[in-house]
Length: 225
Image (tube, rainbow, N blue to C red; front, side, top):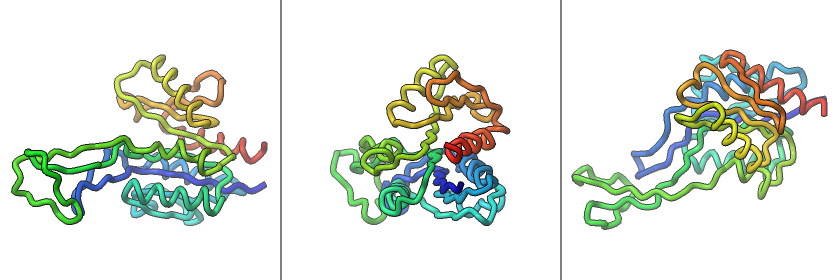
């Protein structure tokens, strides 16, 4: 049995103007490693959407993986929509990208006057006010309205939470997005381990070095179901 798997990885940028943007610290290495581990499974076809396509060889991605690069939130949303809702391409999705939680609604000067962000905002201003608005959660579009019915693995990150708090947050997040499994970690120990939750099963503590293989094993279950 063959399976097409869509993996997202990396960080999205939200433009302030044509030359400035807000982003986050995540590189996409984990998602790229996950894509490589899944590609090693017999019968899989993998498409990776990543903000770091230039690092695919450095991070050991095999040539068999189809790579599509993005930079901004809007570009990632467009690529995901095209693969999921238009092509109906994947049978499983691993959504590990660190997607922006907020979009820029307006940029103003200190007096509250809106500035034109269509070019480069002049550096003469002593203060700029950037107004942010809540972004749609791309993972919450996957089931509805995009109509995906296959296996969905979601990633969740917190900061400063205990293991018990993170497990509660992760289970609620998994059920909210109608995901089959979730990989959760806290910034304090994200380089050491991760929690993996599958449905209502007990939480697994997975060493960071084994995480890509564990996610690939989750995908393998979708091939046999």
